[in-house]
Length: 316
Image 1: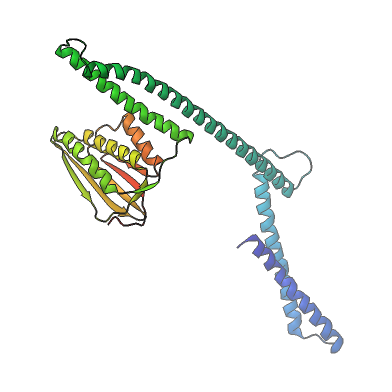
Image 2: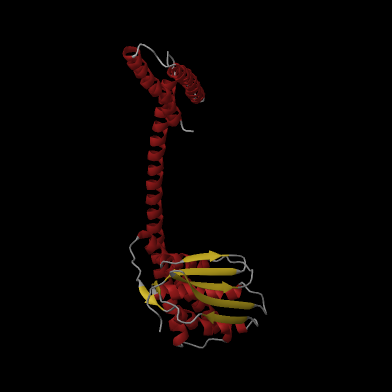
């Protein structure tokens, strides 16, 4: 029973006693005789009022003393329990206010630090991309236009250099994109995109890579899937990276299963693969891109799940 209910209960016998006293006064003047039953009821009510009031007073007192005794470092001087509790509440309120202010300051510093790092990363990647372009152009010219005889090893070295430069440029481009997204200086598109188109566009290259290691690629896309709301270019890039990663994480002769179905207000793409290492900068960037375009990535030991918001527009 709540304390308020206990205190209100203690008042009820007193109210009854008030009516009994009024009755005693009435019969005492009218008939000069008080009914014995009325006297008995008045006595019982008075005793009950005393007992209930005493019990509730002891209960409330013990609870207040227990609460006041639990407070640490009370202020010196003559103080009762309520003062002690009030002092503790004031101290705790002050501590909560200070903690909130410190939390807001830490959050503000963290946001500023993240923006500073994003700006620095964008500047560094942009500079690195310009430097790579300066290397890529001469290599491309050397391979496209023969200024002299090149032996087979030299051609192979130049081809490997061009491939490495192209991969580095593509990777830096993705990192630069993430930095721009974190800075808020790049706004992604929000268009309805067919998920099966995105997956099917990546399947031929995926199967060609999987065939070299005798890996089977199974695709099961539910019919009439709703279109997902995303940026087509970046979403397609991220999905292709996640699919390639699934093949690379699968042992030779294994199976990669790709399935898509509607779940609630969105579409779920599930990739079942091997348990190989999932580390890699490109994979981390692909996860970040999925989140940036409005999706969610959940990874397990042998599966990857991508959830995307969908429109109510049917694909057919």
